[in-house]
Length: 193
Ligand code: GLN
Image 1 (cartoon, rainbow, N blue to C red):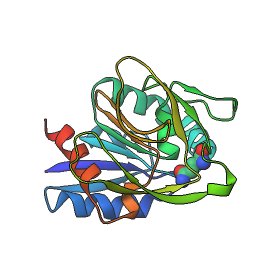
Image 2: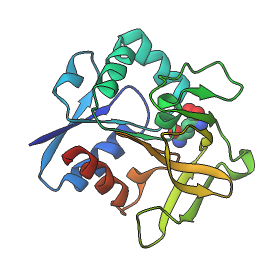
Image 3: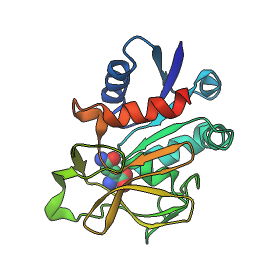
Image 4: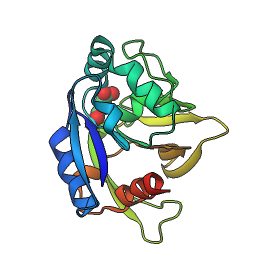
């Protein structure tokens, strides 16, 4: 049985738990990770969307930031969405309010799509998927620079909105809010590989 931990400090935790349970189809269980020590039993981790400044603060004060870094460096697959994408990056434009975990060689622009487009949906052409994927964006960040080892999976205009580096899958949108489970399936394949 697989165990997937959803980092449950702030953000849309319950949506991620439900979506992952649906994707697992009985092949594993989902654990809400709130305390240091719980990550050790997880085969994969989800870093949800929410408010990256808040999640950053709570990860640091609980000691879970270092634990998450150690898990990532040891190869535990991580699905990072929206605020989670901000957190796994190496650099963030402007800002200074969020200290990223530096797990992925990317630079982030927070709220990159501007206030006039706070929320929107877009059909994405995704590398490796045959049919377009309808993605939900909410005050979304974008990846504005990618390092060499980063595989770009999808863009909106110039902005990169889905990417992978080794065992980290990072999305600017919310795969937990739609019924299309293809990104969860990509993540579970990474985990079973
Ligand atoms: N704009 C938020 C941030 O930078 C992310 C929004 C989201 O996760 N839906 O924290």
